Image (cartoon, rainbow over all chains, first blue to last red; front, side, top):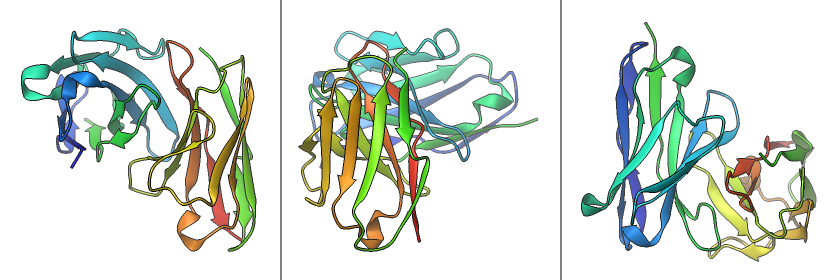
Length: 118
Length: 107
């Protein structure tokens, strides 16, 4: 079964760092890009950026460039989204999605809830 | 960034109704448009890609059309399982963007 499995919910304080993960299985991980998508509570979907796991090439939405870092470890079929200094406004559900040649997201992870609160 | 504008933002309909949701792009995106369905507490589910291609396993009552800057998602006969929020997403440019969403509610 093709699937993306994300790491569990996180509760952090402002200023802390965080890395969440997205592990692919059931397909060739290096053959598809991975996108990250944010959904703030009660709000819509926002595309953050994507990575090509074969060479770790990334591109980011201008809204998120410099605020997060997307990376991947192809040896363990895992993509990451990380923050160096969280803010309360980073509180959201974060999804990873597989990007195919013709679709921007055919398989989605279950989501990781990140709560940032003092 | 290419801006995607969905309308309406909320839609009230009854089971059996024909429902149409519109998505407009701020510039031409050819046919590089996808539609998703999202239910509360769940990840989005791909319905349509390349504007009009039905994703495998998606019921045929869902269809997509359009090209350039104007696109529609049509549900030919609304079913109880279809009450959800729908999003369009363009993937023509280097930076992908979503529409604001359309919530389909029970009338």
